[in-house]
Image: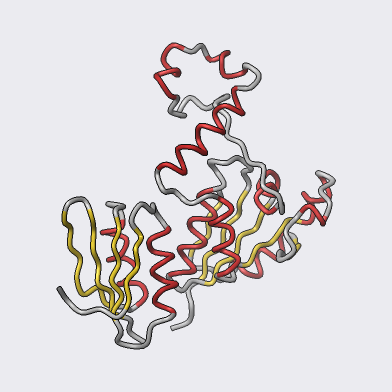
Length: 159
Length: 77
């Protein structure tokens, strides 16, 4: 049987949304899938050599806040300077305490499993991202590159 | 206690790490050899069934005792 194929488009650049593409890609590889992730727009943050991902409570009413803060904290409170940094620190502590892998770890596992990582050339240019800010072992490409892989994929996800 | 060739301690790890570590450990085993995995992630029970089913390896045993989950996975091919 030929390998199954999984194609993912990763468009989000926050700590929380970094998880689905890397968890699914690494797991699919372990199950024998050929896997490719196409990083575009804010998803490009996920292939920077130095990751600096944050999570924000702003505009995210679904985010569980400690000590019931979401109950008594007015929505405007989530815009207070420092809130993002505080929530990011707390989220990272929780991730560690619960034995959840870090994004760095999951990304390394993807690289090790030969998941193809493709950066979108157009959005790299659009955001003036320098090639040297991005990981060495990625490819650069455009929409046609994505379809070359995804055209006969068994599973395709937009995240 | 059933026999096994290698043991993997995945206790304290959460999804998908137990599966990824198990896959790595299986790579070092020969055909027919058995890997014993210890885990604490309750999700790993269904996940190891699904892993075995999709990779063609055999889940010989899946047991729980005192909050720990133990699996015996035989490598096929």
